[in-house]
Length: 313
Image (cartoon, rainbow, N blue to C red; front, side, top):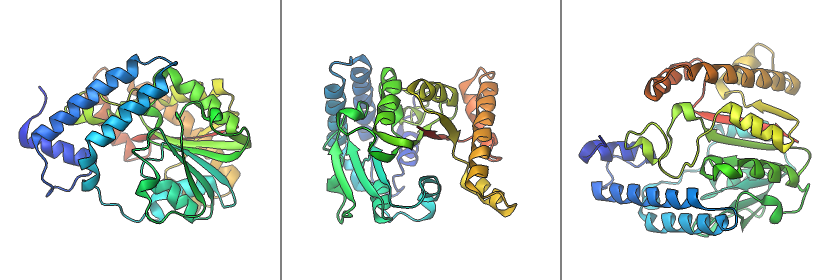
């Protein structure tokens, strides 16, 4: 049975980071739920010929009708710690960075202020540069379908392509095309770095609020390490490895393991370990039990809420 009343409101606020004192009604949440289910159906039924049009319309509708959500979110200045792992993977400027699904632009704006030449993109004009009050001169904005990136950018131009909690929103049929297209706009030895929720720890969309075991909202698919690794291999990437958790990386540094080649070797091993762990978790038939067990494993770095991968051309 789906939750209602105070329980539903509490879950919703927790899921979206809305302050507890904020006035929000059950009706607002139910309207969001019904809207997202309808839009999800439209997205999944789209075909390649009309997909960009359908996706752009769906997300424009979502963000315009749920504009009240934006007023609840306090935008804080990003701390160094928040993007420490990203910056360690990216390295030092000068580098050209292309972000897919920039949203309100917090991460890419931070990278621009660190001295990188950055391009932010979104599928709808409801998200984008209007959220940046004092944009860096290193930052430009554009719109794209998020999948066929080489239709919007020149080949072999960017040192890095990045996305943060984005590919779960793509139509599953577009995943490999997306990886192939990112490959094309990367320079030789360029990297695509991205995060996305793991299916074992989800769902991570509004479905969680209503107690579902699998995504029913606009997370069209939450993936496994194996699915993503295999798709990246098909797309042509030579090296695929995990980002080592920051706390674990600090521990490695204390014992003298800090050289780049050492970290990459450990990151490759870490991905192999994640592949084994997720396979073992599939043995557990109950998604609820699997989710609970994965939480225990996260405490000892044997699993993670989010997949954090680096794919090198």
